[in-house]
Length: 379
Image 1 (cartoon, rainbow, N blue to C red):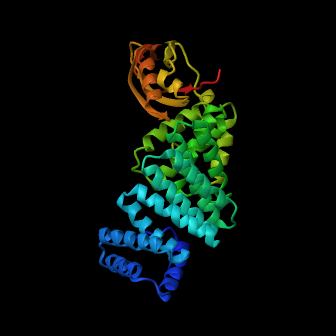
Image 2 (tube, rainbow, N blue to C red):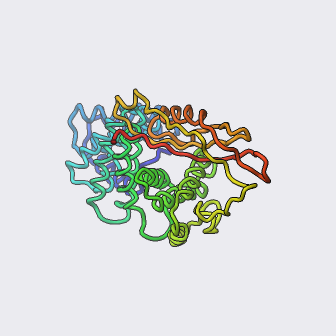
Image 3 (cartoon, one colour):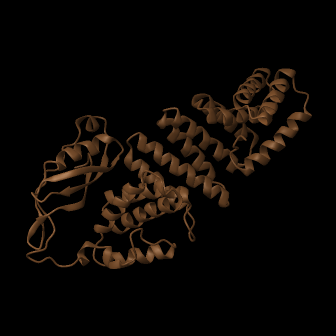
């Protein structure tokens, strides 16, 4: 079964197809269209896609009525996207959107169509156009009313943020993610699909040193993944992000974080004890038992190619401190928007030296130290 854009799209297309059948269309259009429907019924998606392509092209060439052209374009676009023909799918979705605009169609369906064109563009390796197409869909949805429009606006802004990250435009991506978050429900649970926007919002708050906001959105990100996609490869990464963000909370912010999470029905992924949310509430050191202490921590150099390309970024790493004070098991948890930031950071961390952790006066392994680097061209 071919996945249509939404139930709204299903009804819109069904209505238009009914009108198409009632028209005296040329055989060059009706014959491949009938072949398309028969191939769908038989489950032969390759044959259906080729027949849909022929019906749409014939309709364009013969200049049949615009509404039917839009339906034929959308039929082909859905199958082309599913088959990985990203360039063809994008063109067909754009044509469908143009027809809907000319016909004064439903705004939500129109916004969804632009979003599908954006998805095809990004999958086809064109994140710049993907960001622009997603923004177009978002603006249309934001001008409409109702929960459906709000949902499409969220998806479009979130997708725009991801495409902007592909381009290395971190600040623009953060702004788009924050716009996406504005469309989330004011009460009740967040949708499971919201975790990328939550993550980028937390990332932005981290760059701005807004510790409470960063801890909140990183906690939301990790919780959504645990609940909805527990096998996702980013579950471990977001656990480290969450722990890092909570360790940077200022005095008194731990309780505020718990209260805010409780209002949304979200518990911290690693427990609800507010004493675990801030490093300032940790147990006092003594002479025989203390944590590892840094002796030499030279920051990483800004990657030259990234600087020349105008790329800014952020890297989060975790590592262990061996009993001899050297660092080991250095792991890059996240490197946004390019791996080079994590690679350069890891190279630096491997040269760091510490006074080792003491347990009953003896040097001991300290696992799971977390550090972050903000690569900014300003200042």
